[in-house]
Image (cartoon, one colour):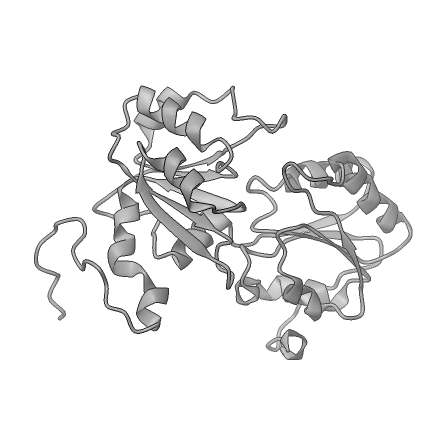
Length: 283
């Protein structure tokens, strides 16, 4: 059981009454929670959590009230203003409040908005970063967001704006030309628009792409394709969000770094996907 974990000895922060801690729960796998996050769960009177928080993570807070505040596209969801004001209300009642968000609260998680509201109302806060799905989720799929032979830049982009549509304020031409690898959060719904914009901006039709759904969980699925076929292949796959899209040659590294498949006893598909030739010699 997850609630049997013992924290190592140390001077751990104390969650005081009336404080709100905003904590990243990581991309899914409970093992990717930070120790500061577990320490917070052990102390909280109330945990207000998002849709992408794995239920098993809440087992570390059996003493707390668990309040669901998830938001999912196209489904009835809590309003952001109501969530923020609920945090203020709980604080003023003198409760030890943990706001638990999937991934990292400050990476497309609206944690900055919630923290700002709390500070404006005089509520003391602490921020606990988490592993973002755009890094950890891709790593579980065997895709490094940076590789010395592939890219010296990576850009993280949201796939929809406040209206739920593809972001109209983004300069897709600049993004396409300025970054070798693109990691797109919440982009599955608008993959057709995004792919078209990148192709119009000069990205190659055969550029490798990957879609990682339910990253780091037991339900994880990975689709490998290229930019020209990305929308059609997503539609044909039947995959559902939440998903991370990765566009760039680093996707090719999955052919050799798909460690979960190797754990199941399969051999790498290609130990030299970038065509580097002989491997470096061990010293």
